[in-house]
Length: 469
Image 1 (cartoon, rainbow, N blue to C red):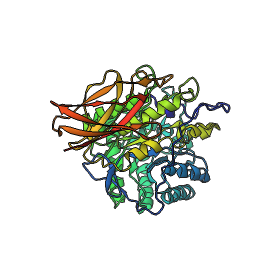
Image 2 (cartoon, rainbow, N blue to C red; image 1 turned 90 degrees about the vertical axis):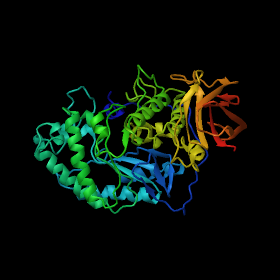
Image 3 (cartoon, helix red, strand yellow; image 1 turned 120 degrees about the vertical axis):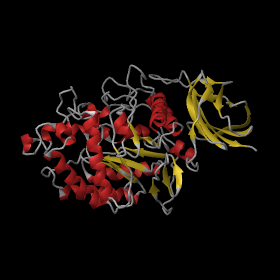
């Protein structure tokens, strides 16, 4: 599946009226609070100031350094802690193949400084598929003809796939990689290193070549980064290359879920829950949502501008928080790329994650694992838990794309499989639009199930459960 990037630069539309927004109360992070992000091998979440946390993040973009300042400020005020930045998108290097363009690096230095000022950790994306795609597969966004590594522009490579193979092209690129990582290794707000975004979209790519390339690149990064931060690489959509994902080169996996027809029909929440849990189950590695969206086809003939699209995005934000993923949000078009089209989709979602961010702010995710559901046929959602605590989110099964209706639901319940848990639980229920508490109750384990009777709710409901004994 081609992800949203395949159409991002090809869609040019006039300014349109935006209908409906998601806005919440400001997350209001402390300006003076200590801030330290780390990942410890074997854990499924990043630690923020020592505590395993679920994080929100964004994919900001711009073609001028100054454009990042309001994007980063807005992200932090809404509760985001992470930004994933594509170094060759918007502000590409103008230097020759293999040389670190000093003017280019200084521009990104300034963006990293801005991120640090806003207490945001950065996952730099060191290479992007479009620069290594020649359009042979019908991709509408491809830039191999402008890549300085292309022999037609004086570079060493006749074809994009040479980056992945033992060639002069790869040697030059790895030399550039070493210089860049060495330059930024001392920066405390580097979250990790993404070798490549969507490797399967490199023209001519194979899994075997990708694994070899990832291993070589990871070795360079680890030698240059004395802080031993994690390394990742991504594929398009929810594609899986087992040997790549199992490789020691990849510390945490990525998913790029886009809820395209025909399987998910715009229901991004369902895709996130299914794909993240399957990746965790299959590979036993942390899963980072690198980017996502309701529709990868861009702005034309898609769900991105549907009147109730903000409801679909809200469902997806909550779903991510209970999926077992390390993070959530990470919208592609809505988090900055709409600016390339002089649109303002971003305004619809400026503080969309703030309610969920408050809900999870004090939760220690370290020992929480995805819970199985015994019965929730009228609902869609998920839950995480351990022997003493659980949190969950569920929506009306009918609240789906393209209209996402918010019906009043009464008398619903969910049964969680929690065989080794205490018998008595206290439950607190939350409105998913406002974050306000809408009820409290008790639940008891019967056999290996804890059945949670939900209060009346409109469209969706969230809860926290604490062992009562």
